[in-house]
Image (tube, rainbow, N blue to C red):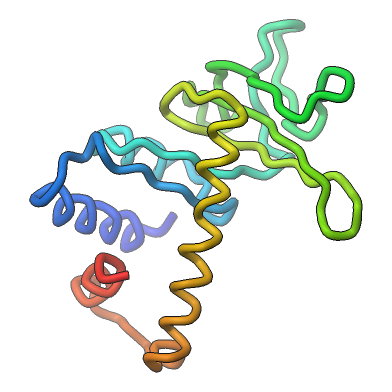
Length: 168
């Protein structure tokens, strides 16, 4: 992530921590936010997270003792969820995280798989359920941007971004 994005998250969390305990915060995010620097920052700030990562991301699998892409790991039989455990994530910059896999049929009938990482132990089902809640937030943010005219906004000040982020 860029430095200003990490600074924005640090600022938002510090503002929120004035009102609530950071241990009550849970950040969910999509694959575009999967970054080892972000994971380190959130752990430093004591913020729990569940973030979807790409299937190509490598994790260290103790059985066989090798780094493997998440997409190469399989489900057992017809199961729809799998807890991979507390594994080393990202071969380039290893960090121990809790990793789960969940799958469901998409609108076209194919299997969609979510690879989720967290700094806290979650069962695959509860992690997927929590991650699934972010879609309502995204739709609300999209609607607010459209109806309030933020779609064309070009915010450049880090403080203005943090206020906008905290507002929504």
